[in-house]
Length: 174
Ligand code: CUA
Image (cartoon, rainbow, N blue to C red; front, side, top):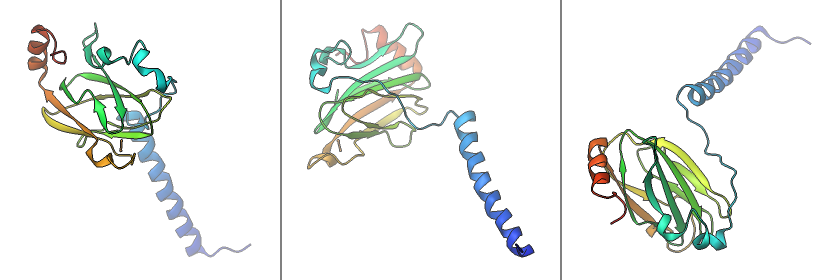
C-alpha cells in the first residue's frame, strides 16, 4: 500500500501530539500527585447517624498525632455539615465525605479539592490548602431544587493561628 510522504509526516505529528498529551497526564499524575479521586470504601447511608465515624458529634476537623488533619463531613439535601469549618494552611488534610441521600459533588474553588460524593461510599481526598482566607465549599453536582444553595464556609488560617486555636480547646468544637 502506498502512503504519501506528506500523509506519513502528518500521521507522525498527530501521534506525537497524542503522545505528548499522555506524557503530560502521566507527568502531572506522578510528579505533582494529581489524580482522579478514587476510594472504594462502602458505608450504609441510611445509618450514618449510628456510625462510629460519621455520627453528628464526630463531624468536623480533628488533628491527628502526626500533625495532619482529618475532616469528616456529611452532605445532604441541601447542605454540608458542619456549615462552617476552620482549617490550617500548609498542612496535609484528608477530607472524608459521605452522602445522606443522593449524589452530591464538592469543590473548594481555587484549590484542587474536588470530588463526587456517591451515597453508599466514602469519598476521600488528600490535599493541602496553601493560602489563608475564606473559601466557599460548594456542591457541584446537580442534586435538586436547592442545589444552588448547598454550600458551607471554610476558613483557612495560618499554621501558627491553627495551633493557637487548638490550644484554646479546638478550632471546630465551639
Ligand atoms: Cu448537592 Cu447539588
